[in-house]
Length: 186
Image 1 (cartoon, rainbow, N blue to C red):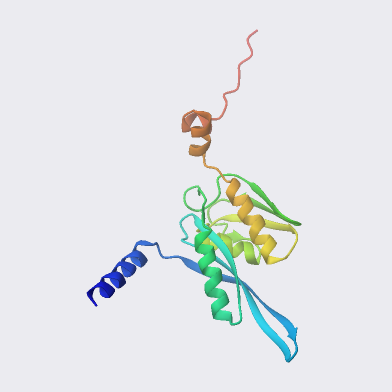
Image 2: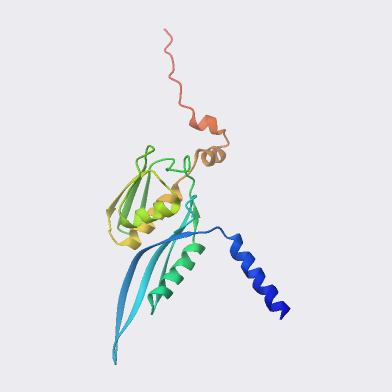
């Protein structure tokens, strides 16, 4: 009996260690399968999960009931999270393009106070990521699955000045410094 209680308390400790994630249901799709006795309905859910501090992931789940599909999608999203560097914790470091299939998204940095200017599924990703100022446009596919995958593809390409400096073996100040105009000698 004591062993069972000990195991339970360890499980509770593990739950406390993981940061609290917010999740957003993006789409639910009802699918039907025709069988001998009629139709069987199933549900597919698309969920975006994030900690609103630079980590985000998406997942899809299928089940006979909506809550079970959402639970499966949330579990998958938590396993597939990526970390995205944010500038001042509110916007992107540079403009990005992301692609997936026929879907193409363009994401641009924005000044403070702009807000999130983006369509449905992209807005969910940015809110879960913790972005406050971003301008985005979806081109091509309007399928929410393709839009989210294209958005995630673009966010994976995001790099901070620190990462670029480390990759080039330079200092961050050298990366951010503007080139000085050369004076012409007569």
